[in-house]
Image (cartoon, rainbow, N blue to C red; front, side):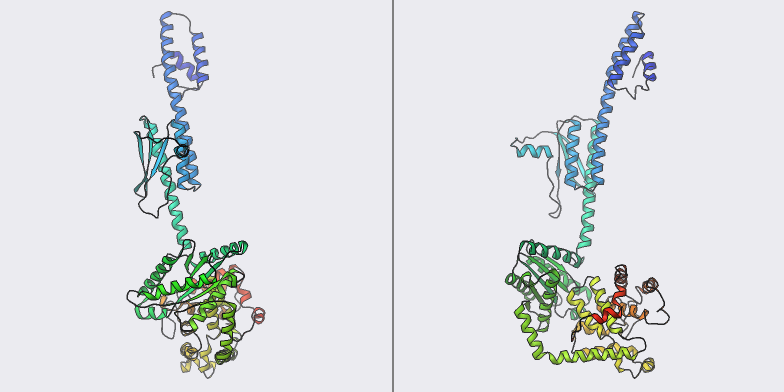
Amino acid sequence: MTMHPLLKRQLKRIGADAVTPPDPAAWAMLLERVSAAYREGEDERYLLERSLEISSHEMRELYEARARSEERQAVLRKVATAVAGCRAPAEVADLALELSSEAIGSPLSLIWMKESESEPNLPAMAPHVRRAMEGGATVWDASGVAVPLLASGRVRGVITGDGIAHEDSLDQLLCDLSDLVALSLINAEATAQLTARATTDPLTGLANHRTFKERLDNEVRRAVRHERALGLLVMDVDDFKQVNDSYGHQVGDQVLAEIARRVKALARVHDLPARVGGEEFAVMLPETDGIGTLAAAERIRLAIESEEFPVVGRVTISVGACSLVDARSADELVNRADSALFWAKRNGRNVSYRWTPEVAAEFRVQECDGGGDQIRTLTAVRALARAVDAREPGRTRHSENVAALAHALALELGWSAGRAAALRQAALVHDVGKVGALDADQHDALGVHHQHPELGARILGDLLSEEQVSWIRAHHERPDGTGYPNGLSGSDIPDGALVIAVADCWDGLHRTPATSRMDQEQMLADCRQRAGQGLWEDGVDALHRLADQGLLDDLLSERVVRNQTEVPWA
């Protein structure tokens, strides 16, 4: 900028120059002061006036450009704050378009581009345009500026504006806004992915056990408050262990994924299917009464049975159903659906049962009439297990303690109430095979000690389920393959056996002279050292969580064990 020397000196006195202009009021006062100070000589006056005129014009342009820049920087700051606050992409886009349209004096729009139906539906016009159209305004076409919105390596939308003249600073503003909106979209997608990982089962894509329990608790409260119907299904794949043993775990996973697909295909919009255990599924059925719940169970059961699965052929499931009219809480709803599933398993599998008071009474009569011998036998076996515990020094009530802790660990790991109860049953008699030893000192000499899991499995083979027997047979197997009787390792070991092993180790630490003087922190550290080798890492993690909740001492206290309700087979 060409400027009169006097003007330069006056600008310098007020801390301004040709790059950093004063505001308009200060500029006017400065010009008046310069004119008053320089009055002699026509030539000099002419030069001064021309310099003042040119400088005023340039200063005004410079000031206006600076004001526009500050206004646009303010727009970027507000939009960046919205992005940092994790606001939804649609909200960020609306804010960016609203503020930038005001700043440049011309309306802007954003057209979103979707590549799949799974991507969110976002508005394809600016907020002011949407409001105008809702008020009956006419739509017309016009040429203008277009800036691509790039996110994750592809075009996700285009920011457009009509009748906007080219300007480098404006181009930069629109590019910066595009980047900020793209960043909000990337953040939202990353958050959605993390949420999905935390709430869904990775193998099947269904809700996981924790999510299902939270949703079920909320839905039960809503249904009770508004006196609405609600149904629950729990399903278990029949003889699934045989599938894994015969075809391998990879094929087993494919079977589970296909079952999940068929269950999901039959679910309504507001139903919630979930995988709640290894081969156990559940479906929550809002606004569904008892008859509708049983009908849904049969539809799913028939869908699984009717079409063969790749590689394995025919697969069946057993289903337990219960409606909220027959339960008073979410826990009772789950427990009674589990009871119905137990009846289905006990009566031939590949069948659906619904829990009702009448059906429950009928099964109690059947158990008294035809199942008394089995109950008496199981009670005798439990008494035998207690005798084995009492026979070994320092192991009184060992089986009860292991059973209580195994049950708590299973629930902490997300097992269903029914499966956790089955684990408790097995843990109560996990050492019954030691009855084959003549006495404790002869275990190693006779090789009986390493065979007692197999012997226990044989004793209980006709009394417990196949899965429970597998837990007892493998409860001394170790993740690193150093256990017995078969030297299994990793995923070949049934999860229930791994849980019993953690509970067995924890109770043993309280009884062994070398470790019984440790405090709880030292014992937990001892278990952590064994994690991944001698003990299941997930089970040790659950043990630590129980300790954080202050539950371990209670689980192993004699007082709590003695106060538990005694039943013939609990």
